[in-house]
Image 1 (cartoon, rainbow, N blue to C red):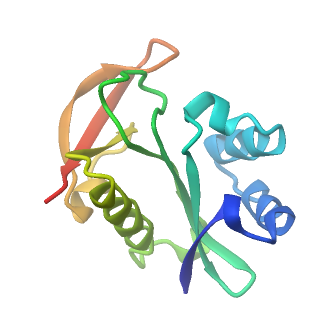
Image 2 (cartoon, rainbow, N blue to C red):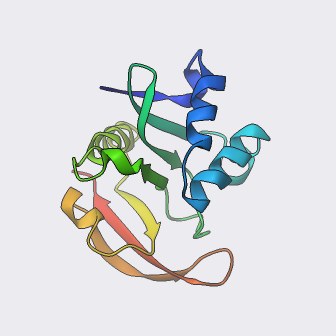
Length: 150
């Protein structure tokens, strides 16, 4: 298993096809943004898409971005579009992606990493804590979690 960055991969078409197989609405949206080359325009030019892969199989993915669905410029970076394919759930694989994001944020000197989600009980397993409710770009409520970079 390894974590790769979609944008630096020489197999973007393959990985894009794998992302498209996601049955989750946000995964389909990520596929559209990548296909239309609009993800970086929406989330920031430094945005990365981390892929947890085993050979040619995509197990899990997420973004690491300046902004996410909660638009607050003073809060950055964000982990978003977190997805693990159903057949690989329950193995804590997403922890590999979250560690990659943590290490990168630490390298850049950030104090926190943020996650906007409707989930409860998922990110706490990886050291994130509920911080507060915030409004997303559609005006809905989102649970914002964060982890302190130490």
